Length: 181
Image (cartoon, rainbow, N blue to C red; front, side, top):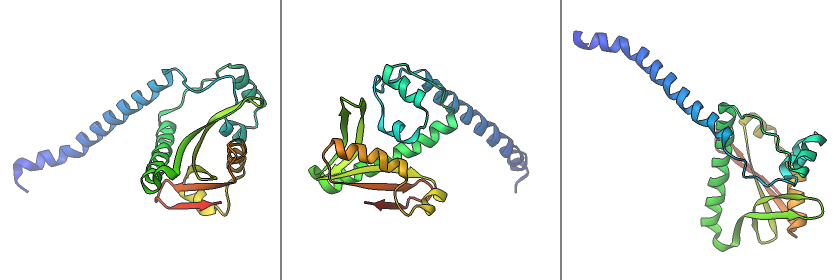
């Protein structure tokens, strides 16, 4: 290596570390600021995903009366959620292209009497579709839909008069998809 490059080569790891630290800090700062955005989710209702995953009656009650419980979402967790949203969008987009008008996405769901509100990920004819992303370890253990996902999907299917539910699990780490009907 020429002498004039030896000094530069020894500086590169330190420069890379500083750039990496700077970029991570700025990304995290942006993601944390997203906690300050107003909540656009419906209030005075129960979201099916919350109903099926939480055992906290108080949290459900707060949702019904419109008392918003806002906890700051740490940047690392927001990145995990974003990966899940990306898989969700990718699968819906692919189904729109592949099936055209036969696939409907984000079907509004609202039960007046029970105060449930949300949207079903999709439907093909009379088949409801719920898209879930999962890590490799969890994906490897799947033999059937997770119980909380079955509860959520059942709420959608019953209210939307759909006959069955397909649960599409996307492995976030290796991209494998498993479907259970």
